[in-house]
Image (cartoon, rainbow, N blue to C red; front, side, top):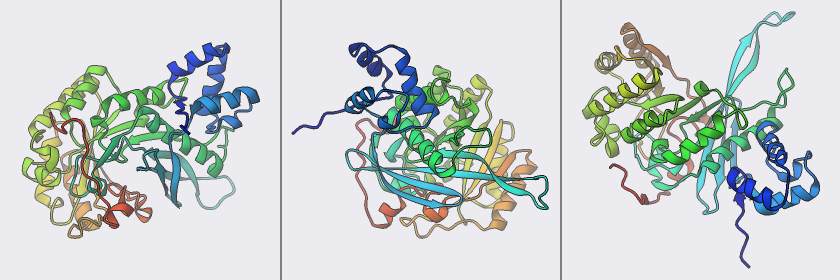
Length: 385
């Protein structure tokens, strides 16, 4: 017997058309959206503002989540969730909890409190870019995620936070505050779906996130950067630079660095900053005896000193496919940071949140890679035009 294919509830055209067929008043659409985006409901049957009959009809026609939960790995600072898609591929999402301390009357010491929650969402299953230090690239490429599969990651996590953390002091539910496209995949190779997902993140009637709280991270796909300019997409942009010169970048990111050369890439970044006025976040991997020398720090400083830049130094996280790579020492990282700061750059030496659950930068897909699982690249279009 054929199973009925359900429509995504995030397909607003399909929802409106169905409501007209059912002769439902237009305000029902707002009720449904409020349940999902404000109340973090992921089951139509729990939408108590709707009649039982309408809940049943919605359950028959639409789906909120286009996946099932395959695994959840937790520790106090982060959570990694594996979602199983209909083709049995697994995408992974990471949630990071940012704690601060504040003074509380009557308490002798500062009290730790949860300041904000960040989600690191995936835009593809696997990744075609193949950076040598990244586990995900060793999986190969499975598929581009649809915009609904991206938004559903946030919706599921908001529901998870609702159960895990409850309400804030102001009575509202705990929710994701920051979204970063730093999970599996290269978002600018799935541009159209990423662009549509941004509408749901930024518009007031949906997730209503601030544009500075959404970050697209790219390995340097120049056509995608130019599309961001053309379409006037004004969110934060992070560039996985990782090298201050062409030779080293080709070693680290061999798939794209030869075509999107450093000179062309920095020219594209300059076009982006001229168009938006935004400061760029530059991601730089710290690998022992490969990327962490003082000479490279001075070279990076010269490259970025006249640009609006914030540099994130990211300690290399273990990759079972690359056993010879090692994390830079704390001493090397701090010396590298000091050199960059002497060039008047803003620098953050990153804390490796999620390493214990293999959810830190470059580790998504760790369990599969450690078991030797791999797929062949399956892109219908060439990676580089």
